[in-house]
Image (cartoon, rainbow, N blue to C red):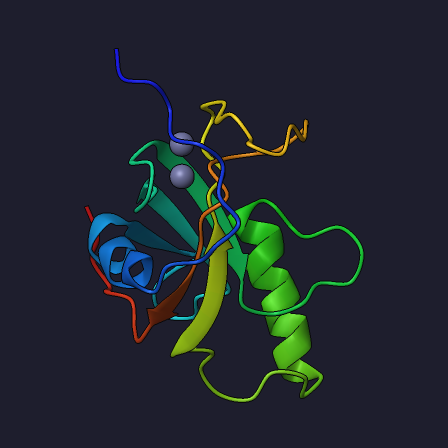
Length: 130
Ligand SMILES: [Zn+2]
Ligand SMILES: [Zn+2]
């Protein structure tokens, strides 16, 4: 078995391009009015599986978890004029959150993932997804 990569603090721009290709993006509650993008794929640096939920709007307090409460929250925010128009395209940064322990050269503990961070830009989401 290959030794896990060392934890890293230096970003690498090439990860963004790799990540865009390797991640499945699932919009919640639906593609028509996405509020949350669920990313599922492999970290572009360490290639380990990871997931990321990106909230396109800031929720006060606890973020809604079920599609129904999400939809209701969105409707409330739209009715209140706090959201105008579609929330895409969007650009955000993602940090590796894989479950593999990557050794840290600086001896820090409690680190998650391999330390890679990268930018993802989502132009749109498809109505159908597999
Ligand atoms: Zn990893
Ligand atoms: Zn990683």
